[in-house]
Length: 235
Image (cartoon, rainbow, N blue to C red; front, top):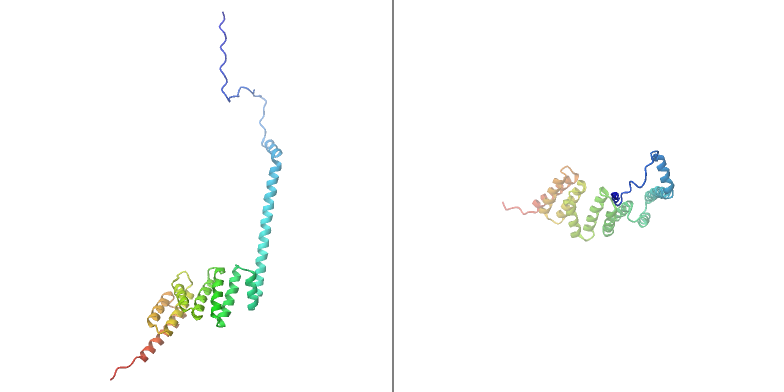
């Protein structure tokens, strides 16, 4: 009896390599063919993405052009503002802008010059947040302290001046001026020890400052006045 043929082993699951014969004449599609096939299948989606990107670029450019135009108009409006009423109108129309801080600073200076110290202090404080760090912001901070001292808030103003003098990040010229005003106030109150302290601080800040020379002159006058007022001993 012939031996029955052994059945072939089962094909492993997932292995279909032997199911499709390979044509010896098969040629892989070129890159151009694959690109054309991709475009045929995805042209609408790609076109939509390109249109969206184009719209975003145009919108960004338009927004930047509009912002530049608004900024130019704001600068022109500020340049035209010369009277107090025009400056106030500019402040109301452009809240938060750096030039609004500059306009408030001008209004504060006007109020200070007119001895309206309470109004000046308020305007200096309002100007400070809108001003970039630098001379204008330092002027506003110093002006606020001085206006408060002269408006009846002497203790608050003196505290602000002391903090200003101690702030090494502030501009030296303004720190020197603040120290001078403290020394001058101390002289008017007859606090010679404080005069000495402030004059020494001023010398440390900037020994060549005109404020240093002025405070030394005030200190010499105060000392001479004290010596003159002192009773002389009997011969």
